[in-house]
Length: 244
Image 1 (cartoon, rainbow, N blue to C red):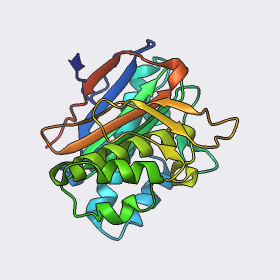
Image 2: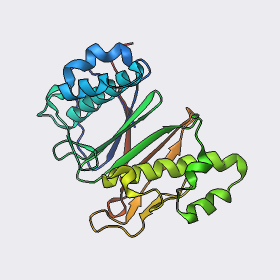
Image 3: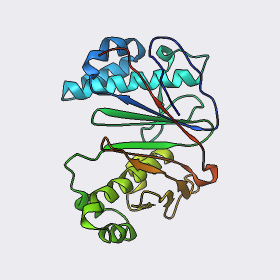
Image 4: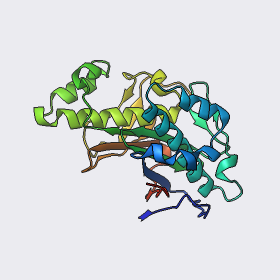
């Protein structure tokens, strides 16, 4: 199921046990700053201005404004401009009692919302020039063996499946990379939804459901929720932004 919400003040409310997975484009972020600015806090505007490249600052600001617009669609009593994020000890943005996770890469952004359930998501552009073998050196030994067993042509896709799954699980925990790349065990296979945290702390939850897909557009996407909350239906949305 795919739906869209226009960022024009018209509100639609989404409340269910499903995972709502939102995609939106940051390709023309510089054209959206005048629309985004009224939704942003002084701290967010200042943070956006500190980026070395103006394009990156514009993408950050637009991403935050879109996130607030989406979250407001899930809470009928709140306007997007009134949403102020708080931050966990590891820097994860939070808002009220609504679990969400946000990620962006290249010109695409992703936001996942799940009522009453910790959630993490990640999106990565697979066309980036990254040292997959070098990064994989920091993975768990079992994961490195699994990657090395793949045909050479499949190594990069397997790496990205692992990478976005790890990021999604670590974001769901609220610690990000502080969890440790070698502690989060995931699969390189497209159907390998199970993930686990080795020697997990009591408040982290040891087992996770982490589906992943690599689209024809070259973006790898993953989400993660505790395994005892899974599976849940995934409803996909595309946010349409009213500018070009």
